[in-house]
Image (cartoon, rainbow, N blue to C red; front, side, top):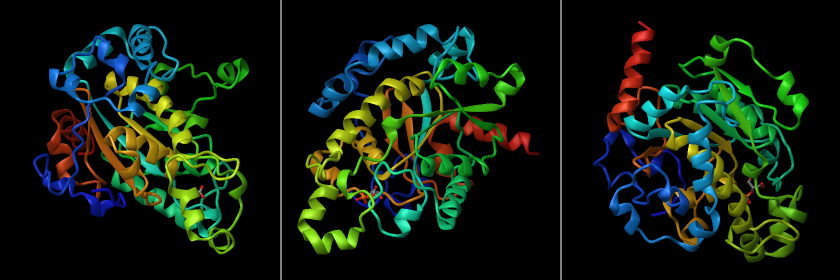
Length: 351
Ligand SMILES: O=C(O)[C@@H](CO)OP(=O)(O)O
């Protein structure tokens, strides 16, 4: 049942047992090395068949996870703003290994509006895209966010920042500049209190839109007229056929999913709530991994601009909760104890 993944796909307010209305992935986190980590996974998890994609994409994650856990009490590369103490960390590991994961495709860009192939070209949002990002922010305003990952492209970064203007946590998203020693040193924050009120934003080219090669800048309709519908459809939606001198979805998945496994999944394991703002094809790749879609299924998966999708990462599994319809959406909180507690705290703070 693969379809356009917007609010219509799933009604999360029906709660966890509403399997008919909400696709729940039965797949566990399957990065093979993660299974050898100190995080205990159920025996069911071990029985699940590992696909070729999983094996090839997630080889190095176990080492990364161990490194995150081992170093989190001193200094963490991916969380230099707010470093958990050893006690915080072991507490969060003990509690439930539960975290939320929000995925948002950027709002409409100026080239989406003009119907041009965009790929790696760095194009900003339209006014409509800005509005979509703000609306997305409203929809996720009650869902905790401890870390944000975006691509290195402005449309994804604008979307993440605009969405966070609506967030009830009212923490300040701060982009980490890791490109050289000077960027790291000059961006340091010297107040622990201020760090606590900040959300680290990690930018990663690996989450960029797939490189569209010689189609970048061409009009999609004119390209159909020139090369034919079938050829253009093959370039746009086949799994492993790249457009001329560009990346296929498989190539995009190779980098995006590897990054997800190496950098993002270890954060979820230690209980960090993560938001990813990225692109149609990098997110389709990640969803393929999370929902264990086949290469056939992923080709008919379409993502709307500016629509947030929520997953709960719990006991080593990703459960898709659909798209939160609004900030008061109850089912999201009913689903997990930790989110319910978080919601209660927010309510207490604002009374
Ligand atoms: O032009 C692009 O970069 C992408 C996303 O807008 O296009 P497509 O829909 O073909 O994946």
